[in-house]
Length: 331
Image (cartoon, rainbow, N blue to C red; front, side):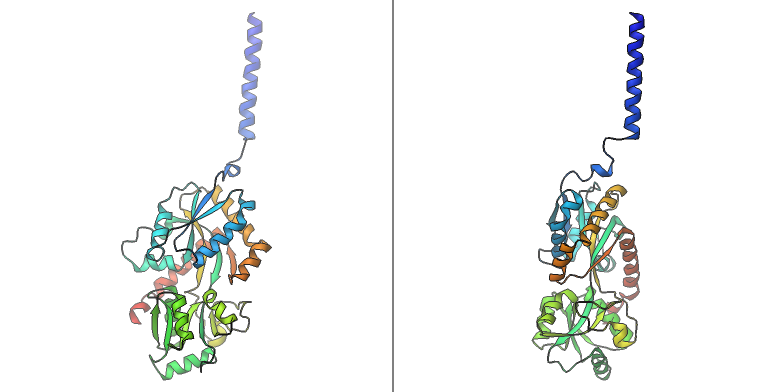
């Protein structure tokens, strides 16, 4: 009986040791494989129909095969994005709440407002999907045929050139003010409550020029109602191949400080393994032919940047905003 017990307990110990070794060497599921196990909420800090909303809903449409779960878009508009970004910064860092980012808008909010309840380092930047540079456009019958015509007129007629744009203290206005400073011109910037009203003003010939995002202007450019003069970006765009970039038009390098860069972030303490899963899935979407075809049809310029590149972009644009934000007071 004693020998039988010894054999039984000996075999049991061997079995326990084997199970422990197997569990240590080959876990049932790796941590990355355990994520996600339920839908992920993506906060959009603006109303439905805006640039971030359109982009995130398009991404959500194509991401499930790459992520293994659905992406649920939840709009939390208010205070120019501040409410939604605050909610994202305070969310549980469990990987199941992420949110849309827009540079430099979130930087401007933090830099220009008092008592903003989030910091830029409260976020783990996962990727950037889209770039939407600022462009100068005129009504199709305008006397101004080139961007240099604008500069020549403005130099001869200080403060006489009326420029419509989203504002006040917006990315669009900042881009225009930086361009005006570096070009040595003085204009009358008129703030409108969005790109739509600003474009309506230039179409109605109430102003001479509009500064706006490329995506907002594209329907009117394609319809022949507006003429693009210059693109404030580092490279030409296929959607308007004949429009010069600023350096070509003026011979002056003008930073793309107003470019809307739209991406995705999570609360800062999210696990690195979860960030990697999300980044991989978002990159797969950005490379999907079906996604790219529909993005192009919507006028979205896709420029994917990974987590490291996106974080570097935040730092770069923060430096530019700090360098030029005083122009808002000089206008």
